[in-house]
Amino acid sequence: MTQMGGQLGLAYAFVEREIALSKRYWAWELVWLVYGIVTSLSVAYIGLAAPAISGGVVDPAAVSHFVLYLLVGTIAWRFLGIIFENIGEVIAWERWEGTIEYTFMSPVPRFTHLIGMCGATLVRATAFSVAILGAVTLFVPVDLSHANALSAVVLLLVGAMAFVGLGIASASFPLLWTEKGLQMAYIVQAVVLLVSGVYYPVDVLPGWMQALSTISPATYVIRGMRAALLDGADLATLWPEVWPALLVGVLSVPLGLRLFVEVERYAKRTGRLKRSG
Amino acid sequence: MATLTATRPEVIRTPGRDALVARAVTKTFKSSREGVRRAVNDVSLRVMRGEIYGLLGANGSGKSTLIRMFSTLLTPDEGEVRVFGLDIRADEDAVKRLINRVSVEASFFKKLSAMENLVYAGRLYGVAPDESRAKALVILRRLGVDIDRLNEPLEKLSRGMQQKVAIARAFLTAPTLLLLDEPTTGLDIRSKREVQTFVRDLRDEHDATIVLTTHDLDEAERLSDRIGILHDGRLVAEGTADELRARHGATALEDVFMSVTGRRLDEADAVAEDKTK
Ligand SMILES: Nc1ncnc2c1ncn2[C@@H]1O[C@H](COP(=O)(O)OP(=O)(O)O)[C@@H](O)[C@H]1O
Ligand SMILES: [Mg+2]
Image (cartoon, rainbow over all chains, first blue to last red; front, top):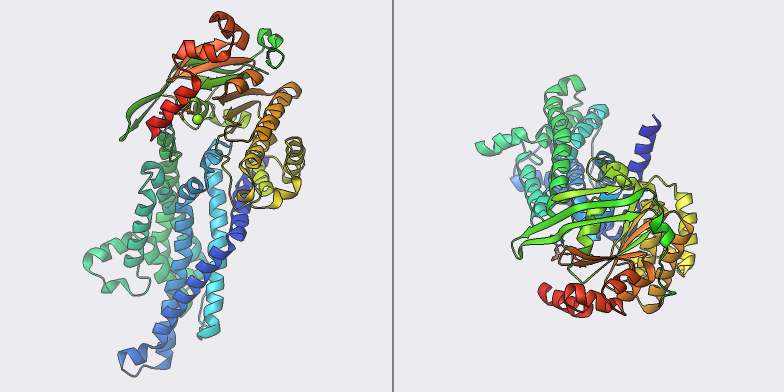
C-alpha cells in the first residue's frame, strides 16, 4: 500500500509539472482554447444555418437536434484528440525541451511515468472540453434536457482509455524514427478523424473507409455519446457502442505499454534516446 | 601544482567496496552519415568509493558515451558495468536510485523556474518539495547563485547559473555515484572555479563518489584522485597525475597526453571539431 502511495506520489510529479508548464505557456494554451471554441462554434453555426443552406424548410426541433449532433462530435473529438496528442508527444516534447535523458534516468518506472502523464492529460482534456462547451452555450442554444449524463461520462472514460493506449503506442514512434515519428502520429490521427464519423454518420463513407471506421474506437464513442446526449440512452442500450471501445482500450493500453518499453530498450541500444549524440 | 592535486592515497588504498566497475565495455553506433563508429572500445575501469575519477579526453573520444552507459541511458554492446555491485541492466531501477548525472547541456524545462525544475526533479527521486527547496537553497548559495532569481524562468539565467542549478539538481537526490559530464565546459572563469571548489568540498564532506569528464588538463588534475585518458574510445592511460607523469617521464600532464595519444589536447579537439563539420 505504501508502495502504491509512493508510486502515486511519483506520478503526481508529472501532473504538477504539466500544470506548471501550462501556466508558463499560458499564451499558447489560450490560442488552443480560442481555436477550439471557434472551431466548435463554427460547426454549430453550420447546423443552425442548415435550413438556409439546404434551401428547404426544416422544423426547428430538427435543427436543434442537428446542432447538438454536430456539437457532440466536435467536442468529444476535441477531448479524445487532446488525449491522443498529449500522450503521443510524451517523447517529442521532452526531446524538444532537452529533458528526456533526465526523465529516463530517474528511478521512476515507465508505467508510473505514463500514468502521471495520463493524469495530466485527462485534467487538460476535461478542462478544455468543459470550457469549450461552456463558451458555445453562450452563443448557441444547446438542449441537454434529454441527456443521460452517466452514459456520456462512461463513454468518455472508455474512449479516453482507448486513446491513452493508442497515444502510448504512437509516443514511441519518435524513438524509432527520430525525424518522422511525430509526423506519422499526426497522420494516423487525421485518418481517424475522417473515418470515425465525427461530423456525419459513417454510412456516407466509401466502403473501405467504413471498414476502417469499425476499428476506430472513436466511431463507437461518438455514436454512443450522441445516443446518450440526444436520446438519453442508458448504458444497457449503449452496450453495443461501449464494448468495442472498451476492447480497444483493454488491448491497446497493455500492448502500447509493451511496445513503448521495447522501443525504449531499442533506443538505448542504438543511441536514439536523444536526437544528437 | 602539487598542492592543488587532489590526490588522497588513503582513499585509493582503502579496500572498500568498488563504487563503479566497468569490464571490457564497448559501444558502436551505426549512422547513415558516418557509417559504423566505435565510440567506446574495450574500456575497463574501477572507481573506488569516495574517489573522484577524472576521464580526460578530446571531443569525440567517447567520454559522454561512457557516462551515458554508466547512467543506464545507453546499453553497452559488450562488457559489463556494475554500480556498487549492481548490474546496470539486471538491476536498472536500483542503480538509477544510486546515481545522478550532470551533462554539458543544462537540460531543464526552459519556461519553468529553477525552483520548479528542482522540486520536480526531487519528486522523481522521492524527495519532498520542502526538503528539495531547503537543500537546493543551501547548495545554490554555496555555488554563489543569486537566490532572488530562482523563481524566474530558467531560460533567463546565464549558462553558468543554469549549470549550477543542474549541479544542485543532481546533488539534491543524494546520489552515491555522481556522474559529471564536462560540468565546467562553457562556463566563465569565475563560475568554473566555483563549481570546481564545490566538487572538491562535496567529495571531502560527503560520502560521494564522482566520475567527471573534462577536456581541461588543469581541471582533471585539480579535481581528480585518479585520471583516465580516453583516446578514440580506448582508455590509453590511467593513474594519479603524479603516477602518469612519472611513468612517462613528463613534467606536465599535457606531455603525458601527448605521449599516449600522439597529439596535444587542443589539437585533438580541433580535429574533432573539423570532423563534425
Ligand atoms: N547517440 C549517438 N548516435 C550516433 N553516434 C554517436 C552518438 N553518441 C555519440 N556518438 C559518436 O560517438 C563518438 C564519441 O562521442 P562522445 O561520447 O559524445 O564523445 P565526447 O563526449 O568525448 O566528446 C563521436 O564520434 C560521436 O559522434
Ligand atoms: Mg561529451
